[in-house]
Length: 351
Ligand SMILES: [Zn+2]
Image (tube, rainbow, N blue to C red; front, side, top):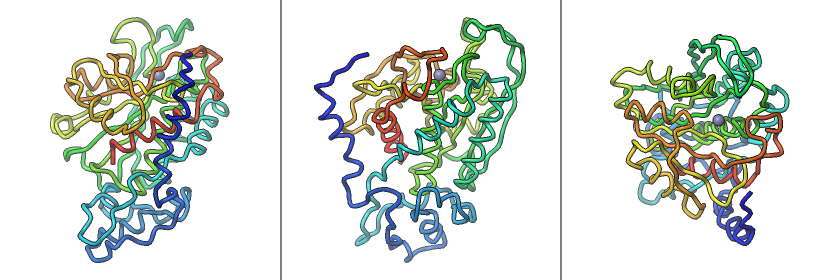
């Protein structure tokens, strides 16, 4: 809608900065960092790099064979004389596109209580397991209602939770999630295969390069409404929050929901529901570096379930588009630059 073409060239130049360093991306074979001087976890670090090829991380060298979280390998403060890890290994836009095509093209509409939703949940689960995560599912009931004009029956949906090896939810951590379901008729390329694709890509980067805190990734079921009001949507995230113990809630430092993150805009919306004191929004905006962001108040995604439980949270995404909640929500509505922006901001924030 808003074109702001004048800014595009400049913005592209800015957004390209991630690839301008000495490391062309995860495919470059970094010399095993000089972490060899230290402990067993250092060897994990080297293996967890899995840098031989992005997809090779699905091989047996994933970080799963120790209790170390993937957060450890790259993030230790560099020792004197040891060059720091590259600032920003690049997000793989082609991989994100492929995930969007699979979800919105091959699988199609993913009503939360449908067989196609379960197929998508199986896919996400398999992807994250291949990256070395421990995946669990939690099922919950979803009431009958109205899915954007289509009457739908009650049923069950599920959240897919991917934890790094050794993850302890009572220790400080982050949650990054995206809803996997769609309204009844929509293939949901933008809403929300885009967010799920970014989550999967962040899972790959986190496993390979480490993060400042362990990150639990969640694909939520049943975010989409089954009627009006604040009780008839976000069923998966509300269930997730209610299943957390007090200790887990306290240990959860921040939650980010990636929801509708691929439609091209002149900036990335970074929003919260108004109860987080802007904390997460500010830290995300700071992490954006040269990528333009805008802020807003938004209670229309899974971050709101967390905010209601006093967990600092934010949402990335929500640029308006013509195909919203319709059959027109196909992969072509998603833009490479926007995907890269959102993945890069979130990755820098996690890292
Ligand atoms: Zn959505």
